Image (cartoon, rainbow, N blue to C red; front, side, top):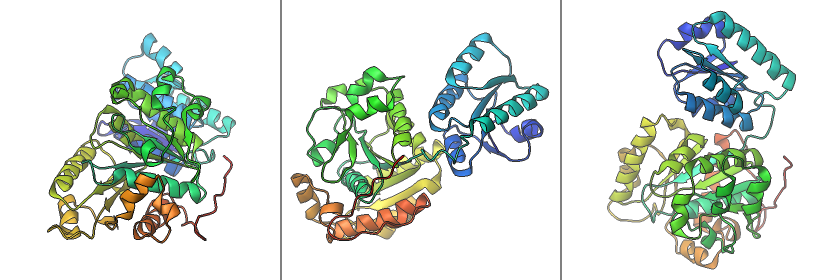
Length: 388
């Protein structure tokens, strides 16, 4: 089973005979890991029209996430520099694009190696789910939804990491009243060679829920010092260590946010019943469409959905061309909980906001990944530790 990444038309006609019958063609690199995870492909062939740097980046990503998947590069001309960098990035072979015989042989060698490794995608059990919570306007409750989602997943048995990617004004640490000790800034020196021990050294544990948290820099001036490549590296590594990685985003689309979108399995888009929030989210959705982000991997959440402000939920659905998956009530308990540093979804199980949020996770988020809803009992859900 093969994924062919080639944006040019007619790619399957050109390379189909050498690659065999079971080939999926994708136009964007972000689709490759999703195809591997969903369908268990063993081979990735990167077409000659794909820029070499993009090919190296994907190969490095797959080397961590799906080591059993072989990567082959097709080039119109073979160059020593390309060959050397490709091998350093984890590419198994570089083949002249018009040499069908060489391609057939490279495919055979790669499939043989994958079989010997015995770690085909889908058999590793280490690919966690990346869920991004995003709004295009501040003040709509995005961080509250991210925090409650992550905490509820953690208390219901999933090993969960919450990452605050609002690098300038992130509030996750404050909402959970975590001591300002480490942050993502402490990983900057590890860019390019981050490992599980390095990540674990800067993650804070929220004692009440068990969710792991990677907070934003404590000084807003440090935001520009966190490279986008590091953010992508953190996400790729985290998904191999956790069942769920929840990303709390800023209300904008800088480079590190766009990179995180590419690595996300599910986007939770948040709006409220006001025209600026709806307008900005519509523009953000247009950007996602332009970037080729899958529309089926998006859920729309309407916060404070019961307010009577002259705009209705139906108006929002019409403007955004998306059905609302969750309507959260306007509740004074939400800011009160944030001020107390507690998580409503876990600590106040009968609160209307908490009930709606848990229903959303159990009946929208979990089923998106083929999981069954969890069973809650008592005031706090029993935490089950699952070995990885």
